[in-house]
Image (tube, rainbow, N blue to C red; front, side, top):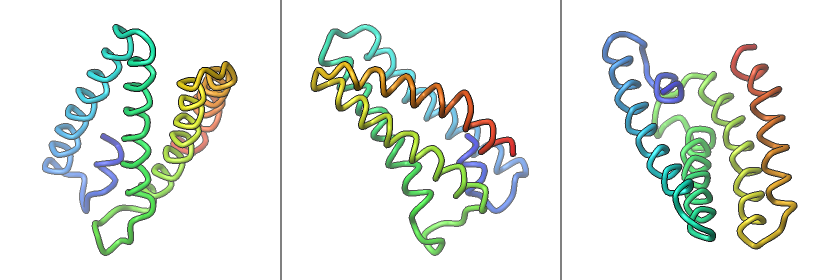
Length: 127
């Protein structure tokens, strides 16, 4: 929702509807893969979790790294996308380690999420 809103020229009714639609689509997408993750046994749950995190990494990475001539985005979208891309890359690495059976992967994931969501997100989004 927020990333889509920041990639538009205005935030009027059309922009808000577009952001709401894409927010609903991405929420449904995430909920589907999280449901698969919760009801499946290993390794299917870890692979679906890895796929979800990887797809979000690609999405935010494109917003961050694609040249502006491909699509309009505000400077705040680049800052937001950079933060989420780096956080998601850390998640993908940690989940990949967990899929390989490394306990360190689970620890790394929870530490990255706690620091990323608990501390850094507040400064990046609200500062």
